[in-house]
Image 1 (cartoon, rainbow over the protein chains, first blue to last red):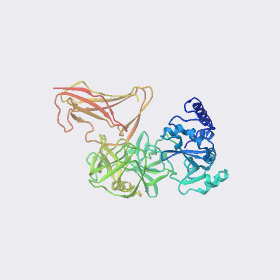
Image 2 (image 1 turned 135 degrees about the vertical axis):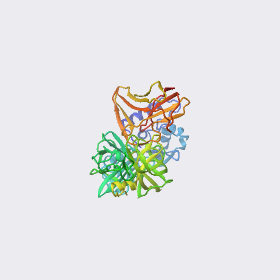
Image 3 (image 1 turned 45 degrees about the vertical axis):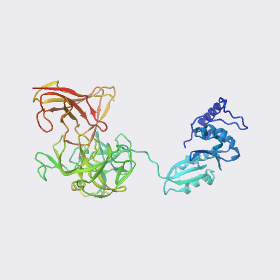
Image 4 (image 1 turned 90 degrees about the vertical axis):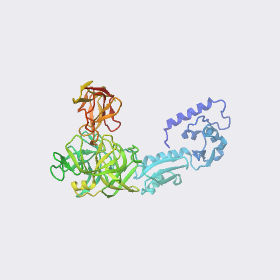
Length: 408
Length: 125
């Protein structure tokens, strides 16, 4: 739970007392006067420490209002203080469950704040919580992090060993989207260069150089290597520079089946070398909550475990910064494809009946093989005007032009 | 967002004459506006429909465009114009008959496409 400042608590307690003083019908006349909560709003736990002797925490146990008291003979005070809250939950004061607590809420609060102040200096600490449902201070640590360090810190701070519990938990991360800055860098994320936005196709190692592959037209000049500088996700963010274009073969004419008057390549792909210190996951592709649902929020990671060329009827997927994860059937393979508004023909490309939008250029294209494992199929570069069909360069064409790549 | 988007076309043209069409994006506000537009050269569609709504020509019909996104900043009062000509042919290449048509402009973005209100175009014999 989040704990408010002492000043706020005092104000809340004063408000509770004032509310009780103004409520004629239910005003307590017992030996231990206590404020009555009249609304469904959760009580201020800090305020209860001053009105319920030995109060150790309040929670709902399968819906039943339940309270810890260090002295369960003070049940009457708890019933009076919490009668309004219990009634708002459908329970009478006598139905409030009272458990024997070992520690007072005020002590737990003081200990949890003291531990919180110092424990994050240790690696692997995820959270510190005053656990009202356990009458303890709970420290969440990542798997492999030291529980002993937490316990020794607690001992140094004078926290009783029994009052603190450590538990291994998953790290908590921001709900990042494909358009946010994300490290380690994985495929599907937004990249920025000049005044353009594209997506990362896949990470790769080429001749020992850590790299990522994106579309050739996602460089300062399509075809030819000009050292385009890439940022993830925007150049305006700190620490966003991730790499530099190092390979973008020129387009050719009058050979290899290139139509008359046109410039051609077999892939719309280029490679950029990661800058020193930029973390990336080889084989990693950002995963969202599901295909064709429009979500851009990252919920996991696909892992490339193989490469393949698709055939008509295969199901292909892509994850890109604009339309997220889309999925559909391969409808055409090895199609010589004219690029609208240019004299470029991309030779032997693959069409997929699935959603696409501006900014998805450079995205990974892959097939699902079970669990989070995927088979890398290629690099997306184009789509139709309706955004219902995307076009990609098969991975075989990409490696034919960029050279052998280690992709997983 | 204070961007206005309009299509400009002649009220009337003679049968067979190419029809000049301009899409006009204007920042009518007082602060710069960023536009997220598709393509290295901006992708835009023009839709010609008969008066009964049947589409006879789309500029992007069967086109495969690069899915790069460009960020264009329009200063207050600045206008971006995109131009093309319609040769009075259907997407199948047949000449269209005289009559009343509508012209609509569409610009894909990284969200919903921008779309103009349709304007009337009369083709006279």
